[in-house]
Image (tube, rainbow, N blue to C red; front, top):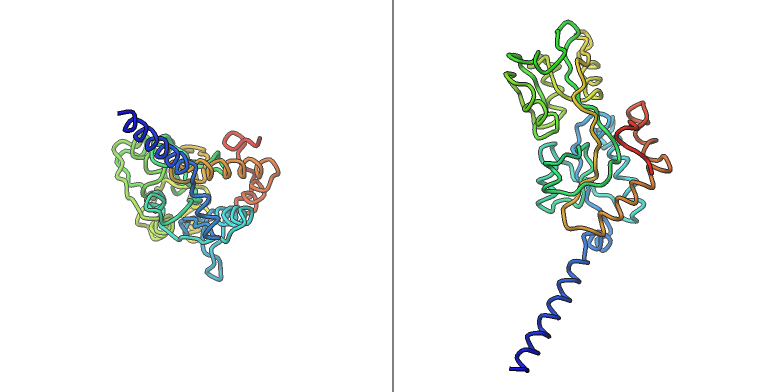
Length: 264
C-alpha cells in the first residue's frame, strides 16, 4: 500500500511539474523559434491598414506591426484578412497576433486577450451635409451601412432602433457602397469618411455625431502570459518614448487622444 501511495504521489508530482512547464511555455517561445511573428491585419481600412500606390501594405497598424517585429528580433509576416475574420483567424492559430484597429471591449475580452491600448479610433455616424441626423433616434426608418463584426456594428445595432442596417465585410466595401450611392448614411471612422469624400466630393459627407472614442489593443489568444507581458511592456515603452504617437500622427494627422491612450 505504501509503495502504491508513493508511486501515485511520484506520478502526480511529475504530472504537476510537466503541467507547470506547459503553463510556462508560451507562444512567445514559438515565435522566437520560428524567427517570425504572424500578424493578422485587415487591409482595406484607410489610414490604419491599406494598400499604397505600389499595392504594398501601409498605414499606422502596419507600421506598428513592423516596429513590434523589429524590436522582437523576428521577421514580420502579415496575414491579410477581412475585418470580420480578425478574432476567428487568431483563434484558428493562423496568426500569432492581431494588429488591426480592434477596439477593446468587454465582450471580446471574454474570448481573447488585449494589450494596453496602443492606438485609438473614433466611431461616428456620417451622412451628406443636407441630411438631418443628430442622434440614434434620427436613424429610425433609415438605412445605415457599416462594417460587420465591428464595435460600430455592436453599438449601432443596440442603439439605432428601427434602422435598417446594411452590413459589409470590410471597410473598403463599405466605402464603395457609400460612394456608389447604395447607402447615404454610415457608421464608421473619420478616416473612412475622408476617403469617401475624396471619391464622392460632390456629396459633402460630414460627421453627424460621435458614437465612441475607443482604445485599440494588440490582440492575442488567452493563456499566453509571456507574450502578453512582453507586448504590454513594449506598448508602454513606445507610448512613453513617443514612437506610437509619431506613427499615429504620421497617418492620422493628430496626436493620440489623451483620454484613450495614457503614456506611463
